[in-house]
Length: 191
Image (cartoon, rainbow, N blue to C red; front, side, top):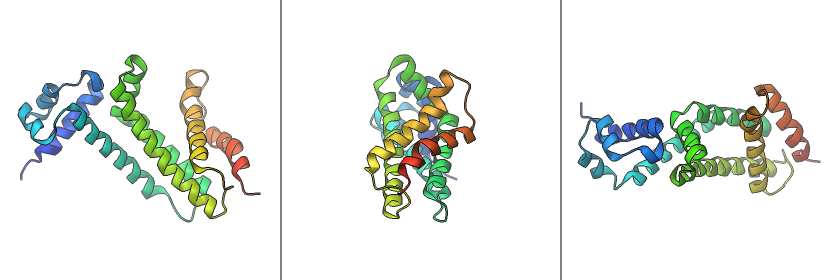
């Protein structure tokens, strides 16, 4: 059975970025973890940035796969939103690379780590925006700017699930859903 060297390099790089962060990861470390020569990496990727970009693409694809398999046409817009956000935030909190990137941005402000997290957030917002627009077309919610609604929904959910925990006792999933429902569902419900 042939070894997929490219995949081996990607997995090693993801492990290195998760352990050391973007800034401290070197191609030498990736080569060592992958058990390949450094030249092997350069046959697939021009530099560390390109390798990081490939890993972010795969993380985004995995997040899309998770939500697409769980969103159901027979469920209401809000049921799907709550469920998708739970899945995405759970994925984000359990994914070692993302955890390390958040720490690196917080501790060092590494631009590449910040940009990587921004790309992931942008993908989540685009996905949410498409669901908001569809729900508005179906009359499930008021027809407001989907980009603004998506941003507010996402930031509210992040504030309640993450930011709140830095100041107060964490809210349960049920409490979070109730607050999101109260703050958003009432304002978005069709008249």
